[in-house]
Length: 82
Image (cartoon, rainbow, N blue to C red; front, side, top):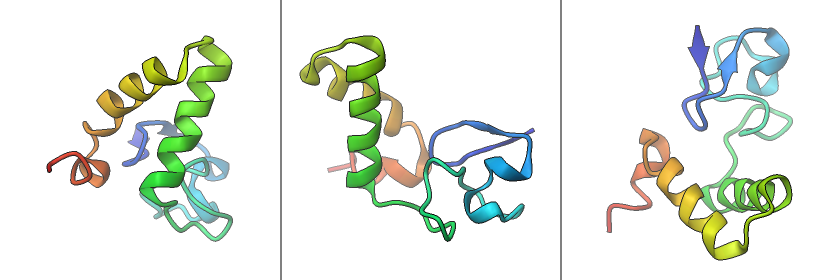
């Protein structure tokens, strides 16, 4: 099974791959319409907002969870290494 290298989402169908490109390392949610990876800031904000809406977390708690998750991914870890 192939997983998105940005968020870990399983990519089982072509529609899951960014830009509908089977060789893309990133999913449709982590990329723009052309399949290019979104910026760290944009992706982080999207996930924070998701947790606020879906899990009913306050912003501070959502940020903490998102930062714990994102720093585990190689592509995002460099933003936390300072």
